[in-house]
Image (tube, rainbow, N blue to C red; front, side, top):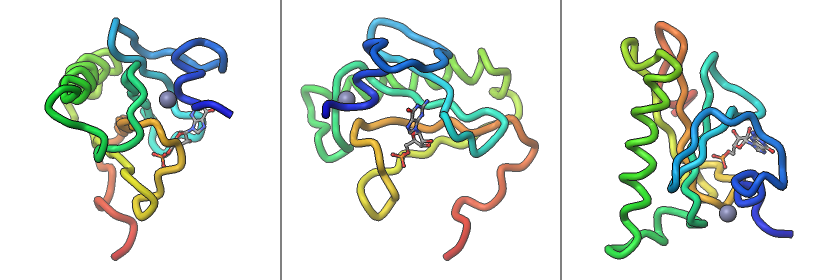
Length: 116
Ligand code: 5GP
Ligand code: ZN
């Protein structure tokens, strides 16, 4: 089976690349929920936030520095944008390789959650 996002990072599964550096790969979400919807993944496979620790916490700084760069590339840094991590089943995580969603490209992205 393997991991879909590891396959995307390795180019075995096609994707539309937005940004890449030694640590991070970012690509267009296949089912965008906003005019800009980019997924940012670390090249180190990490299942969820629960797998972070003192020795691999660089993963998060690598991801968030890439988020800043991608927001600039997509010209959404001025207006603002939303970052989402669906972490675990209750959040609706379906791909078990931790990733950050960048959502933007609108004046108002709406409420944080659809309903409560
Ligand atoms: P999550 O696990 O955070 O709930 O959502 C996974 C995200 O990955 C979804 O927004 C979904 O549209 C996206 N996704 C699932 N499969 C693919 C794929 O094969 N290619 C791309 N580019 N995105 C995908
Ligand atoms: Zn993976």
